Length: 488
Image (cartoon, rainbow, N blue to C red; front, side, top):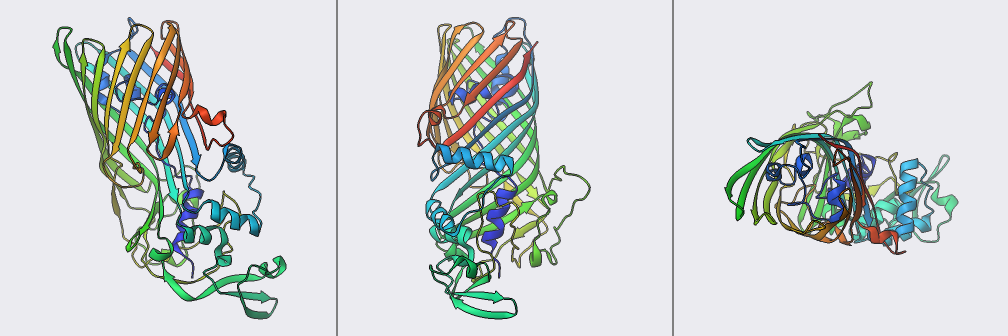
């Protein structure tokens, strides 16, 4: 018998599903860690659409357009900076040396009750036009890949050790035509282990028990966001009120969710057929099973609609206070939908994953419940923010982002950020801040931006945690870039 644990965990890695970062692909926001009241034009889409009503700070500029803005980060509680870099390079280069049995045992310990978070946001294209009379309208195509995992101790042993895990008391040994059942022990030679094909336990346990303390969630979506914002009230230089709304069409390419806490067990997935996952017996009589041939472009297996709403108050043309609710809505997944039952595990036929990039090792999902479709809410969030301009040199702000539901892509806990921009020259901007919460530890974002030709061309580069580059035990790698951003 093969477990849903093996299938879903490996599916997560094989599909590169990741966990979102709240400022998306904007390098300007990534460098300061504050976004609700400090993003503008199309970069505020998905954050606070009311910001479209502000217009632009550069005289004569009414139109903004940008392409290929990228933000990505990887965090692991169990790996230091050098290890994170090594494994990230291995994954990108397709070079993942196989673990020895001792390395598997160590990995099982290291990743037990240890969180991993990874995200990638790609702003393929965005544009916004702003006028004093009509307000601002913006459009953006954005890719979001989101992943978070935390393995319980038994789940970590099953993932890395397979039939070598302590829960299996017997191993099926095949040497040519000779078959024998041998006792599982730490001192079995490598030659003998190479001839083991499965592990068996005389005391089977349920998935909910084996996965207790485990949480895995990931999703990959593409959204087409159209938003509008404008000034609603203006009382001279005392207070101005702004409002905005956005609507987005969302395509889904993959979703995975596993959680088990006590008797509360949930396990489902829907993955694009481009990944050619072999579902085995789980595919029999599944009305949602789909296939794809002849192209490497992922075929969506989910579709949905979402909304963003936001409001701002600007006091004395200096202090900005903002409130937004983002990702109100849902996605209906109707391709390769699998929901696992809480059944007993008595046998497993894998020796555990051989590295941290196990894309070639996919097990079957055993499920008696394979529906035609599955509707999952978008990761709704409530955003509170404030910022203030201090002279011409400094903008400072604070953000609080609260998860409003518990679905793949949602934060594990509230995120708080404080930061700002220092502009010693009209064309030069330094950004810095501190963030804590979400799915990451306390971080120190930092960035630099150039605004050339009176803001006509803007380029920027930032890190969501610059401190990881200066300390050996830093466990986060991140980068956010934008080189094709223009104002006209």
